[in-house]
Length: 412
Image (cartoon, rainbow, N blue to C red):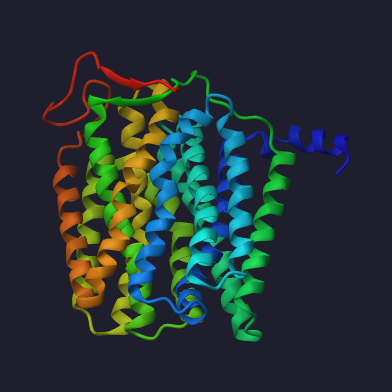
């Protein structure tokens, strides 16, 4: 692309818009990840011969980069959030492109680790950018629009894969290669067209933990635990117990994304209108019902419907991010985004492996424990203030401080 044309395009409003930038990168991220995800259970079972235990191991490996996301704070010492986002998307695409060439236990573990490193570091950088570039007033709606872009990307991936399998049934190798190359290509285009974006507040360096963020940390931890249970075993149950094939899984995910394209911005507006506390309560009530339903149902249709409900209500987790934005020091956003991803993935590293063992004896117990985790999160949701802010982080004031102290571990 000629340099003069690139400059001309960058001057256009859309390529100078933070929300357009965030939505575009989110779209690219989920074009790749959704393609990898929708094929995973069938690829693992049909090509690599995975059992429920093997899936648990794989999901644990997939979450290790998320657990290590706190190391992004050290990358931020010499790399802007936008640059890290681009590098991460390129790594994501590479991992996806290689997946189909290694249909073995160890091969799938290695390619998953590469893919997951790109995915989780992108999510860390993108969340940090979003909370810096969007004001507190526009953040709920803006994050909803970003989730809508995620859904549009997933809709494109799932719909395309379902259509391709209906027409020609290509190899897993071919689909993974195309998805990976597309992710890399779209990232290069975005790097070429979008201008530089950076928040107005200089971010604190190093790993920062503050006592007054304790409720946000706990909500993040429990959210990660219950989400990983469902991601690791929700789709696998549909495949193993109810015989869902690739096209059937893709259709369910297609429905979720079609709903979320329109529902996500509305959920964002809802959060802006009613606040974070009622939203987090509503999300957890819905998840308890989903987990219990998954544990007891003997109907493939009901299980599929519950899968859709979970996918739609997951959008409401953006209320946790806007809650943090309201209570935080603006200079803490990047380091806390990194720490939060690690906290979110503490349970995710051991839950899939541990519960893979439980799955082998009683799959229903996995989902009942998930309902218990969602119940604990519901109890904590009642501690979120109706109008959160610095100095008003919880309704009780437990662990709060008038002048918040920080525990800082500087980079070596």
